Image (cartoon, rainbow, N blue to C red):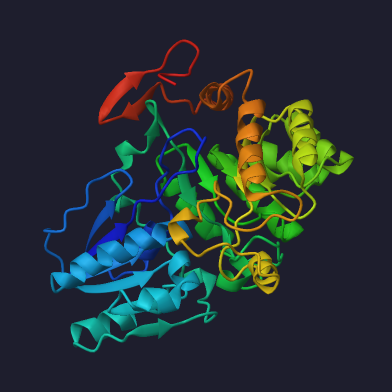
Length: 424
């Protein structure tokens, strides 16, 4: 049996340097599929989708709301050709009812321990319209090493330098942040993977640079300490979302190879200033993630916020516009207040205003989004700022002997320049 697994293309965030990371959801899903099943994978962001390729079952793995309209188009084309189509992934869970109009089957939940039943039903001609394992969470010990062999790995590079590989050490999130749908998707309980399984997966990844994609590593102090101690001997260099602002944990993170973190910047407080300072003191870079358009934002506030970001010396800043994704606390609030402008999902790309702001017009918020990007990067472009982070990680690698002299681009090896920046 052969499954054609597809990751549909999606509109990239405006103003962000253009690159593609290897997707995480499809390779994690593929690890939950029986070994005797052949998987052909297409990431439509880097490869042309071949509708004529023969396969028994078409599987669409969809992560983003702005990705789901393209997934529906693909499914409609395959079904018109007589193929059976099944959907899964985060965006599928957020858009179940709409997706069922375009699918032979919709899988809701986490695949481990469940997807074998789907395959059995398909093989016996009994594929169900809906497989609902919502919050029927598998034991995290069932999570296998992601099946990265399906990736066309050499195409995931930025100007000749190979990008990070993605992995996860836990699921679920005990926090309930206003713009986030994770509590709906993965539950409010923190569900860590066995640390030895995390270490084994890290060891199996040839790339020295990783992105630990957990929503937050700062959910259990003792687990976080144990994780950092366990991965330190691997000498990997990694990125993550927030880590605990605690002296011991920060020191352990630095020793374990933390390259930089994504830090939400929610205000201009000394708390944020000190948090960034404490990370950078340990050689950990900081990419600020900044949501524009909350109810306390007006044009003057956003200008002061950008000045603050420049003052605290962030390595990078990523600005997005508040976007009310389905099943988030903020969407429930804005729906109640009749402030949602439309549900044209392809425009829910986090760089376009799709709601009525409280203290600005729609046009003003859109203008301030452009202002934030232009002002923050006025003295040095995004690509150079990004290159500086890569130079820092190369310096770290040289210190511990893990630096590789060549990067891969388009199937060819390229020597890095003396600065270590390659062709960035």
